[in-house]
Length: 135
Image 1 (cartoon, rainbow, N blue to C red):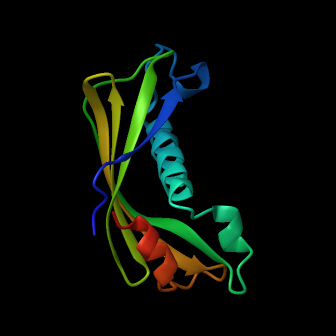
Image 2: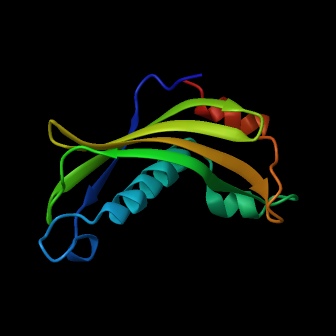
Image 3: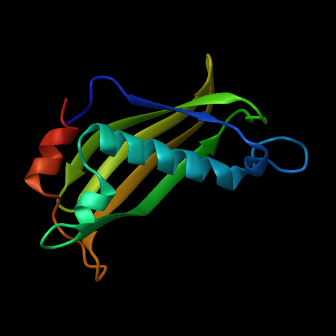
């Protein structure tokens, strides 16, 4: 299952995202990727707050993430986080993410997230969620 077109979310780089030189600190990219994933889920009709209100509350946790930084982002840059749902298997959801500044690819990530109960036990992704991630 793949999404035909990545979901995009725009982020402005603020002072708090940078180090003393005005370059985005590497950990800030993780926040940018997280916001992109959250907004992509929201666009598919999957809201974290609604997941917590289910009869059996559910949440997502990142299990594995491989990141690569190619070009630095700087203070005041306007960035685009592109998120693509790459597939699901049981409790796992796989995504690819990229951060762009205009025509420059700055960073990319391969993400494996797990659906789980609030006790931390993996739970199969609900079929309704899986259907929403499909093109």
